[in-house]
Image (cartoon, rainbow, N blue to C red; front, top):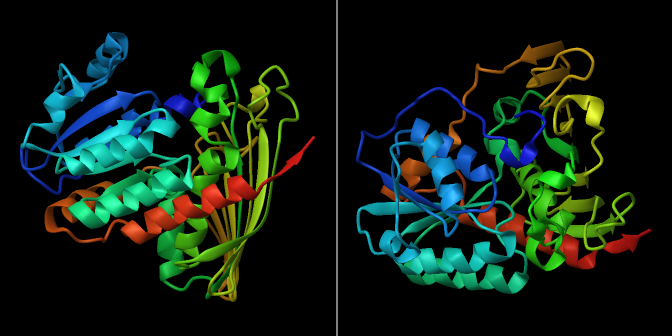
Length: 356
């Protein structure tokens, strides 16, 4: 579904880190199509998908077509009361993700939510308190890094010192609106949280990760509705500048302005400037040249390189996350990182200047 970002669900190779039945999960709140990608990744890493629940039977039937091993649960309570379930994966309406996560963690289970994980700072604080109280995980599917092979590959290049110290990260993240396919909540600001809160969370997560920052400050942010006036609460454009605690800087642009003729839902790109070189990532398409995407370009003091990495890297986050849940470690992503990303995107959204 390269034209449909809302239902974009990458599939990788099976790379089990646990045996069948060793790590049992459930899916619920099927409001966003990212639940398919989330569950693909977990199942490929060995998770056993026992239950699925949503109040809409049609969504449940569709889900079971992709995951026939899942049983339709009668209620949220049936899943939360089942001691065999260790993790609940959910892609609720954004404004409902935080409260659902609190409920899941209080039931004694880890929680894996689609981004954005919150729509208010109050929800973030409630989740922090519940993590502290229960010891459970509130993990987030920041898919533009975790489920994109070129983004994973670049992280490895940076760790190996290919471009030295990261000084600046720029993200361009256009998306295809395709308004007729969107649910009603998508156009309601209180429910989706705003463009910087939603799509922007991906970009901030990448900056913190690639630049090795644990904290940052939002310098300026802006939003606009340039082209979709029939949806007055929608923001179809946003951008933001951030400075990390270690001095690295970040600029990102997000929008719903992908032209229909592109062929994919967005020409997502990442540019990373280092002290000894630079990298460009063309995630989903190399426009007018290669429709596959996952193209990485590197220039440093040794030379200039091109890596086409689709199907060659995989998605290690999911196996690492399963083992983190079992061993109570933080190798896939730290809780502080997931929460700091959420905090910064909420601040960026709250401070945003409205353009016309």
